[in-house]
Amino acid sequence: MTGKSNASFMSGHIRWLAVGVVLIAGMPAGLVPSFRASTASASATNPIALGVFIDDVRNNMSFTTPTSNPASLGRYASMVGRIPAVVMWYQPWTAYYPGFPVGMANAVVSRGSRPMITWMPGSDSVHVGYSCRDVSSGRYDSYIRGWAKAAKAWGHPFFLRFAYEMNGNWFPWGTSPGNLNHNTPAQYIAEWRHVHDIFASVGASNAIWVWAPNKDGGPTTIAFAKDYPGDAYVDWVGIDAYNWGSFQPHSRWRDFHDVMVDPYTQMTALTPKPMMVAETATPEIGGNKALWITDAFLTSLPVFFPRLRALIWFDAKKETDWRVNSSSASLTAYRRIVASPLDQGRF
Picture 1 (cartoon, rainbow, N blue to C red):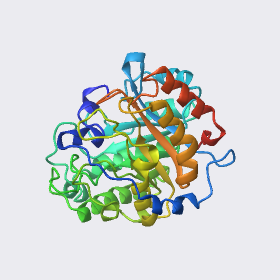
Picture 2: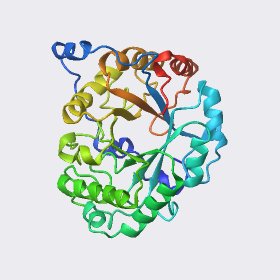
Picture 3: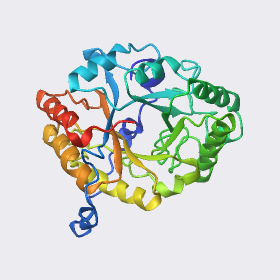
């Protein structure tokens, strides 16, 4: 992301590079028919909604901070062929983001998209003081309440992806072994419910709560169910999952089905809530990115993962080039997806 506030407080799929990549094998072939038995739910009458996190500074398309030029959204839409259904960005609890981002949210809604704010209860550089216990004890209630009231006053529905990738150990709210603040799953659940209750108390019902663990958190990542706040506190569930290709010593090329089958199985067993892919992307290194995109959207999603109703592409050049325009072939493939009747979902 651009700007100091986001640069070091990035998605956990960056944080765990130092500890290696977990290689979770795909489900054995004998178990796959349970997915094949499901009829495809993605269709022209029930399409998947495509969303994006945009951080392509090189091509003047970046929408990551309150100072971002909203014209970036139009440039991205021109490149891929349509304005995305969802526009996501990250917002830590720092002075750089003093409150609810009305300007950014208005820019998204005015273009016909739904905002998704990944709201991170912590600072970009300091972890002490942002444990799950700190939040649930009321230390930040004034900030939370003010933010929630401003969200209510803004009035439009928006996805609130609060305290994401909690099942890893790289964020102040993480719960897996070796986490920064010695949090437990029970303490994380208490934090989530406390913040949710504040929103409810001020009537900020336009916040759509998205609980999104990480599939690729490394060898210490814990099972989703341990951190789940409960159906009464969650509106949607999401999964963060990437194909890391072969650009790292311990990673390998994995198609979308291989990447998604284990977390999808966990999530479908956990809750009937609507489900999205909250972050995903693939590199060029190790395989054919254009074919990966085509297979993911036109085969895997509609056939094997019928409960996935939205997908957010991580369109940035970070550890590798995750952008859909990393090559002309990849961009052509993604433009074909954007034009497909299967992927015309809106909110």
